[in-house]
Structure formats: structure tokens, C-alpha cells
Length: 436
Image (cartoon, rainbow, N blue to C red; front, side, top):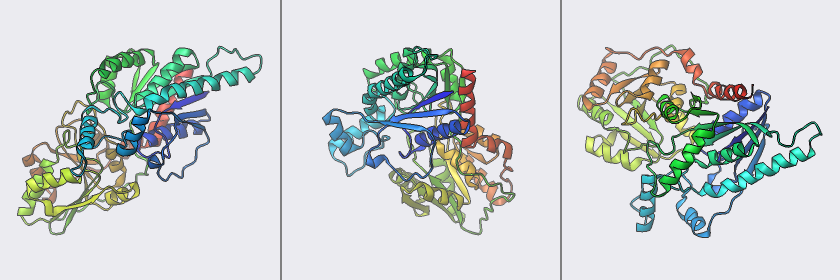
């Protein structure tokens, strides 16, 4: 079996998207599959330390972009995830940041994206590779046979799917699995920019029509894909990479000692609400209970704003952005970890942070209307939902502190299923079933 993975994201580029695709490739190699990875050439600012090796053919394809966009990338990093503008930015920089944050353009989410200029060079490389191999193959090989048994594209950006669709249509790939880490036109956070949205709907419809199987990261997203395609849809969670170490003891939330809570990662203030937990902390502070909240991530301004409103700014330990290893260390040393459901529980958002939390050890305190994150916590018994109002959060947290409510004992079987390796095995089995 020959497998081609197509993704602009791949190590040593940073991010959960890269790790997801690398894990697919790793499991394919472990299964004895001839594996090729087609990705982009990485810029120096995209590269982070990466020591794992992979016995696969990895091809980074360079691509040229117009000079104005090249200068804009250098100044604004417009191929990185969109962030809210800072107060120190110029008017032009703030305007660009606001447009990207609202629409998702040039952020590996919505059209246009810089990797749009990568689609043709990547497709051409695949065509040349297949033609070269067929021309040197023995006489028993039909030159019109597909070169790759399965092409697996993982997006966003959406451009990964466009490359794979080209290969499926041309017959170079026999079967195609389209992996949606996020939805495209129905994206939960980025609504796109007119008139590109018209072209996006047309292209998305072609992707959903030609793919032989679809995968995504949560049940609500799978439901949307099932309603818009006849192809089978399977959920492949992001999963956790660090081994889970079972513990028989429940963390001691002793109100007579300082209690350490932690949150690592980005806070999407428009879609996640930290106010209930901050209000609960304020109420408990008034009762003389010492609670500190360590925040690691690029959302210090949002946290400062909400903490000032709740009157608990002195309880926050704002660290800013830290390395992945530092974030894991913060998680392991906390008494409990905070997470927030997306405000729309039907959006299907399951952040990679939740799976990190599951393997970290401390219990997870979740707030918001019950959605897919609550469902995962109920399955694994790794934490509880405090509720979606300040009163509910304060009452549940008070019960935990008074010993009137305890955290459930973790479910090892369900936790093991959510490891990144097990989820990647599910993906590779899906590819193998398409071939057989």
C-alpha cells in the first residue's frame, strides 16, 4: 500500500496540526505502509525544536507569493493564526489584524490563504513523481494505474484538500480521505470574506463530492459533514501525546491551604466565557479562601480585563506565552485545570488543550453549557462541569472544597482510547479498509 499525506502543516513547524499529521505518518510507517508526506517549505520563524525521526519520504515544496504579500507576511506573519490586535500596533496593522480575526483570511482557515500559491507546485510535484515512477516500472505495470492507493489530506488550510482533489481527479490517487480539523465554510470562529465565500462554497462542495471518506475531530462536526456529503464520516480525535499515569488519589483541594488553578493556551474571549469561574474565585476570596490562577498563553489582556471586572486581578499569575514543555509542567503542578466550553455547544469545538489536560493528571474544572468537552469528561471521568453561571460555578466549587462533592475516579479504558497513537491507528485502519 502506498499512502500520500498532504498537509501544509508538518514538523518541524510548530502546532497541534503538525503533530496530528506527523502521528498519522508515524502510525502508517509502523504498519509497514510506504508513506510519503507532501508539505510546504518552512520559514525560519515557523520552525521549533523537533527530535522525533520518521522513516518516510518527506517532500517540502517551495512556492512563490507576490512581493506585496511577501512583505506583508514579513511584517504581519499573515500565515500564522489570527490574533487580536495589540494597543501598540499601527492603524494599518490593527486594521489587518481585525480583518483576519473576523474573517480568517490569511490565517490557514479561509480563502484567500498564502498556501493557495502552493497548490499548483504541490500538484505538479505529485504528477512528476508518479510519471517518473511509472516510466521506470517494469512492463507489468500499467502506466494508467493509480500511483498512490490512498491520499490523506488534512486541513485547514483548505488548500490541502485542493491538492488531494487534483490527484484523485487525475487518477494518480485511487482513494481519498479528507481530514477536517475544522470545518471550512461552516467554521465555528471565522465567517470568511465576500466574494471569496462564493468560491469557497463551490470548492467545498467538490471536495465533499469527490472524497471517499471524511474525518473530523468531534461529533458535532461529523454531523455537519454527514449532512453535506454521501461519504462516510469518522471522528478521529486529536488525542494526547504524553502518557497518562493513573493515580488513585484525588487532589486535595484544602481550603485552609493555597489552591493552585491553571489555564494554558489561547482564550477565545468571543466564544469562551471565563467570567463564571472568576466570579466564583472572587466569592471564595471574600470567604478567606486563597486561590491562585496561573495563566500561560497569548491572552493576558483578556484575562486582565475580566479579572479586573471580577475584582480578582491579584489572584492571577500571568506568564504570557511559554514553551510546550513549560505548559505541561504548569499543568502537572496545579491542583486543578480550567477549561471552557464554546458558547455554542453545537459548534463541536474540542481544543487540543483538553486532551493535554486529560493526560496531565490534575482534575479538570469546566464551565459553560454542556457540549462536546463535557461529553469527553463524562466518558473519561477526568473532571466535572461546574455550570454556566457564576452562581453554579461558585456552588459546585464550594462543594468540592467542603468535601460534599468529589471528583469521579478516572476511567482508564476510555482515557487510553483517546491517546494520539490510538486515534492515529483508527485513521490508518480507515485508509487500509479503503484499499481492501
